[in-house]
Length: 126
Image 1 (cartoon, rainbow, N blue to C red):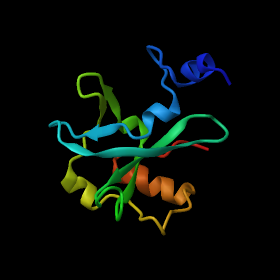
Image 2: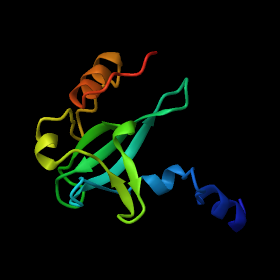
Image 3: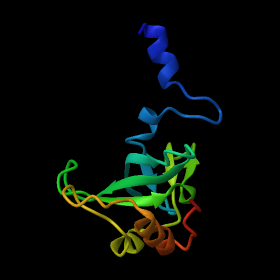
């Protein structure tokens, strides 16, 4: 891979962004308070659509943090913030579906319905 290939692979366009540029991006609530960062995102293998952005929140330097799967449609990119904005505050996250380093969920249909339902959304049809 040449230097040019590396630049192209991580570049962004007006409507697309490379996955490595999304991971680590800040997530803010509607008032501009930072909630955490995007740890990773989960992509449906069949449709190729992103179903969840996994928000890393809490802990110290990533240690002891919890992971909150957010339906992708809950996030909006805000150029001024330089990150994603969600209409969720820290209090709402206290009861949101989450997991720790050693308890990753199955991400099956039942879990998807639980997560999407918590945010008032319908889980995508199979």
